[in-house]
Amino acid sequence: MRGLGEAAEIAEGRAAPARLYAPKDIDVKAVRKRMGLSQEAFSVRFGFPLGTLRDWEQRISKPTAAARVLLTVIDREPEAVARALNEAAA
Image 1 (cartoon, rainbow, N blue to C red):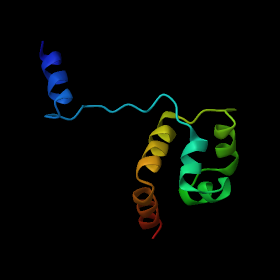
Image 2: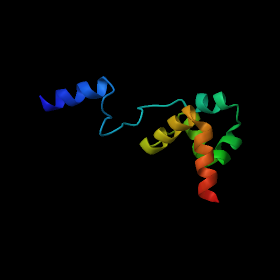
Image 3: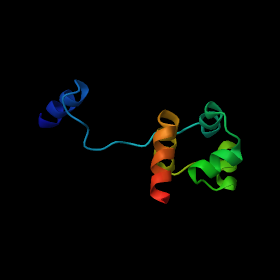
Image 4: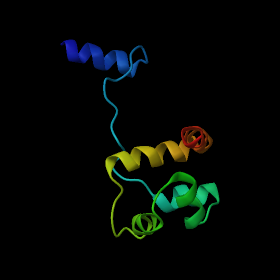
């Protein structure tokens, strides 16, 4: 019953989930194209190896869970990610 109460609180926005899950899949090519970036520019801007990016886009391999999380954040808040990476490099 306690779990059901917690689930209801999360659903109603009164509590945050204890754990967030990575999306099962992400269309990496669509994310990049929405940003209007070439493969090269996207890989440089966000630190992905170009070959890895190409493999993801061609569905030769899939991004890891951590990469899917980062790609989701890039898709929703690309400037925040770029800002954080630039500040980390300084």
